[in-house]
Image (cartoon, rainbow, N blue to C red; front, side):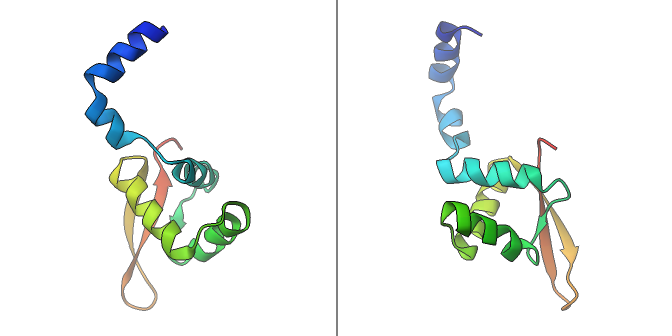
Length: 97
């Protein structure tokens, strides 16, 4: 697709494109989520965010929020799993895996 056609697509779909755009932080999380091919659960989130905190300065709570937002935008698949404590947890996987 050449630049002119791409600009036309962007112009004609600007609202949808705005909703799908990712922040820099979300792009970094997507790269890491893609590396975790088996997915990221609530219980493994602390290990996941240790890497993010170390490399990208993000808190555990913010990482959890960003995973949910990426799910809401359609970049992650979310599966509800039973938790040992009796509740449930979410397993997030990249749609690109």
